[in-house]
Image (cartoon, rainbow, N blue to C red; front, side, top):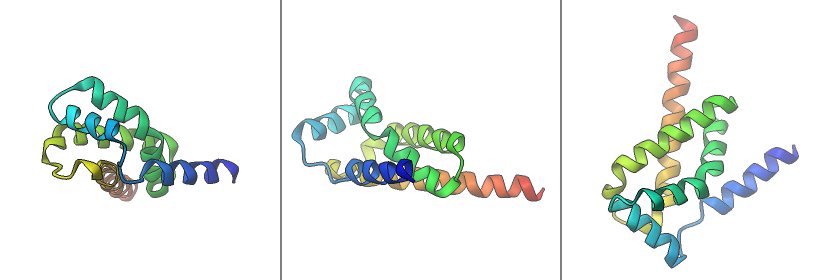
Length: 112
């Protein structure tokens, strides 16, 4: 229970709208291909993304895979994000969709 509460707190903190100029600069740098900037964003948002994926998948290993896939998709599509201040909610949406797709695929495998 304590672990779940901690994950919820991290999730709420991690998904706030970006207001820190340094973080906006990281997003902008990452959008221009700066992998170090993107790496720092990955470090900041990894745990919240795993928590989002876990809420869908209820499997810690799959949740980690989903978070990693979400970061890969975000890296490839970051230039499409018009409002850099909304990076966290945008990333969360990608992660949620990846986790849902994984859940559907897992269900299909079980039913096959």
